Amino acid sequence: DADVTQTPRNRITKTGKRIMLECSQTKGHDRMYWYRQDPGLGLQLIYYSFDVKDINKGEISDGYSVSRQAQAKFSLSLESAIPNQTALYFCATSDSGANEQFFGPGTRLTVL
Amino acid sequence: AQSVTQLGSHVSVSEGALVLLRCNYSSSVPPYLFWYVQYPNQGLQLLLKYTTGATLVKGINGFEAEFKKSETSFHLTKPSAHMSDAAEYFCAVSKGYSTLTFGKGTMLLVSP
Image (tube, rainbow over all chains, first blue to last red; front, top):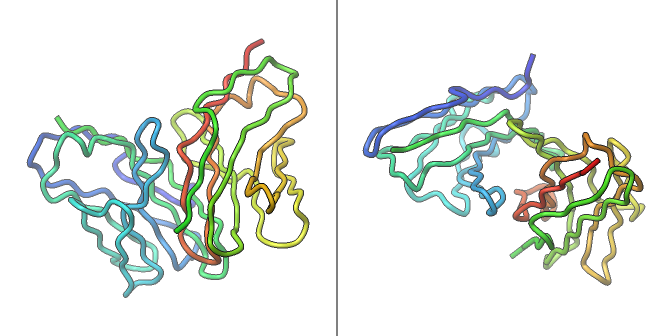
């Protein structure tokens, strides 16, 4: 069984729609992250959470919001999707006593 | 602020040849350094990491990297490329137990 799961794996939506991407983990880690990957740009940090009551903005948080519903769950929302949010989105986790991050399989989002 | 520069968005080698992927970093404090690999349609997987101690770090699949403080580099090498090494490779830096900053990635192409 996968340690970090993301749903959905693929999503096509239209401009202006609200979208939620979900991430769940069974690793027991405190820290969770959301990244966006665009070709040639590497991974950019959107939001991160070091525990259930902690939410922090990353490099590119504009247009996104997050919710840490439980230690194991971290959701990313696009309130009103726009075409330049078309990208591959990754969730990751890490233990508070280490900095190695473990990644989910990704969600490919297309905004038309 | 931290940053990572990966020289070359694409590197091509022949099967059996030396693999060298270059990474230079900028950090105001002693860095923790990482190499991740991404196979097609998958998330990122940790290859190796440097935190403290020995500057030559060995990772999975025969890869290794050397931390050179004077050159602010953390280049990834493998003596003999295999077809299965074809993937995208990301260098990353962190400041202690904090967030990761990724480079833009290098696509490794291996020809028979």
